Image 1 (cartoon, helix red, strand yellow):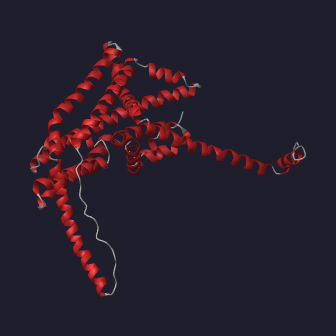
Image 2 (image 1 turned 180 degrees about the vertical axis):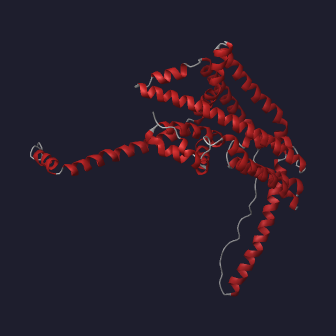
Image 3 (image 1 turned 45 degrees about the vertical axis):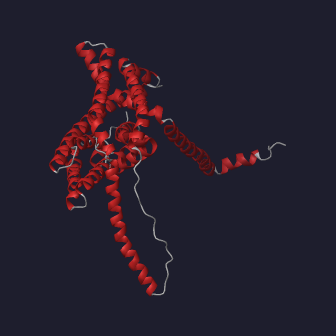
Length: 386
């Protein structure tokens, strides 16, 4: 049975009430659109989480390609070096730095792993002291309730004991995976760098219109420039911070100050949470070495003071206004990528955020996102879309 009888009614409705028809059409179009976007984001981030063992080396290689590509181009243009030669030198140099770092700090890290039971025992002792103090308050509260004729019936809490996992065993299980990921990232980085501008050229050729091609070239150029500036500035800052932390830990009498300086250098690539982890580690070792004496608070307080000076004064000056980010957005980015990719995701959070901010600045519909990611004084510098 056909619905020819209903067709004139629908057409009449369109003629008599065109505005209502327009509103209904927009509602029908907008609803599924946002639903599709939401489903896509869920599937996209789910895929990133499930394929992290493959995606992480690829992301690292792409980020290092953006930073090192200008060196390859300059070496070819001014010195006449063939791209694969420059790429091999850069990749081999990166591998040497990684292996040298592992070799230099393998001994101190093993010593820290061997002393982990001591640190855990010291933490358990302090937890026991706190429990005893809270137990006094709890008993007094129970006596007051009993005197008032009330029985709380609450059972005493169970003992809280920090148990130390086999750190060396965990490292032995994780190191092969880390080594395989590093090897894959370096090999992929070599192919990206040795191809010269092929990666950019193929990406631009895939875009349909001339304006899109120009925009893609501008985005790639800005990402190279800004990301190189950021990584160079933050590496220099972290190097100075590591030297300052190591020297300060040596002055306060903490053992293995060079290790804590190196850890400060690495952890400071993670905004906020890296400093908190460093303070906690230094405080735990200080508690073990100096006991419950008030002097045990000196190492974490010194660490806090140095990182506060770096974060509030030095980094804003050296990084510059264009690269300064919304602090809330940075913290949210670190937490999100840490949830998706673990500790490695925390290291990648800010570089990825820089890339997203630059891309959003060139797309008109994403300008609100670019303004949200930028610091307040840097919002006016967002580049207009071509």
